[in-house]
Length: 566
Image (cartoon, rainbow, N blue to C red; front, top):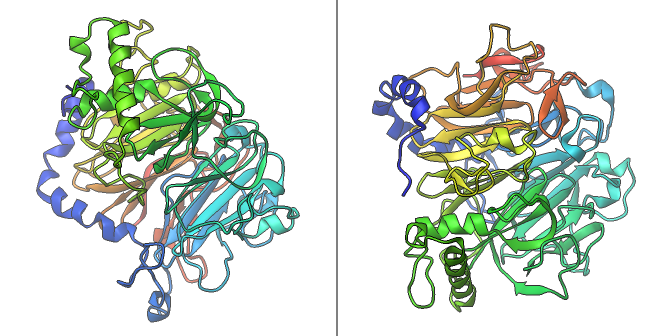
């Protein structure tokens, strides 16, 4: 069974930092929920979110209100900030719309602007994504409010008619509009979670139905193929790999417990406790095959991890468990896996992941064994409730998924570290975020690790190869194993991570924020950050004034870890 230590190669560095922190971490982490809740009142809305109905009026004399980057944003060149009153701001690339009726290249280096919603709308989560994750393409924005309503603006590949609002003009797409109606003419139900992928939006409703809309050429998990201008139901599963209708080869509908977006693949955990995945870069988690997957399909590699780590929850009808050490051949392991799947799918009562759940700070804090699923470019990851983070890659092309592994890897299927099958990368993990070519993990004791492409210091906030400044492009600077992010004070426990494609932030339990990476760099396609364009994403709010509430932007190409909010 997996242990609880950080990677052996990092023990020394972790030891230097943990010793000075342990005395204060417990209380600090306990207060993290208060920091990340943007509401000030105790009332709860119909959708189960905290309400801030009168908070803004009560603090009308407060000149500047701190805004925090949203947890996971996938725009190639913009960033979204949210304050505790539910006011949303966009900075950087606004060529697809600034959320206030304007689309212009001239806004790329302009101060952040507030996104305009109808009076009384308070946003609790937001995100964005772009075609090919490339600076030269469109950006699609979405936001969820405290009443469980979805708002979108911008463009998907295929134009503004694919952002869930039906037939609207380009001009109309520059301002948020509510997504109200499904493709069957029903009112869109109350939404409890909102996710994005390349050119699609996924909305999970309170009953466990997934609604998907956007471009239909890939990443669309609906039973029928094609573009979806309006939300379309996506609960039908299949056993057939590939892109196509799953009506004729359906393995039945599931109720979703959680749904997880990503770059060019995605996944969900059903109430039967099983993991399903789909998208352009899908794999079964046990082989090197990459499949453009339409309807959700069981992910064998990810489910085997669940079965091995939680034998009390996952058994055959005869009570047998999945222990690969006692199943010496692949045929035996496959047979046991299939028997456990069949039993889980046949149970009349909800499985270990019970009903649909609202995430807390980007993770599932329920008793479900899956705390978080993530999907970087050809690089899935699975975080268990016990804190173990598993990573694997899709296909044999090391240009993409390889640098997200964060662990030793092998090309041999017989090796426990086979790169195309989930293997342990890091333990004691609370949550993860990812950029276009790098990622970060927050541990339960408030430490932040990073790995991946670090050519502009976007992975770990400091140079690890050579002596060039972070503003220089050093392509050889690649962090292959988890390494502590530099520049965060040793005595400060971190409570929350945020990321966009080429920048990341760490927020402490008392509201301090450190940022690193771009700067003005932008994503240039799938896994790289470069200087193809220039936008401001990190803002030093310590310099905020009444006339410049976001303070001063980081104008360098990229920056080492720097404090931006106290």
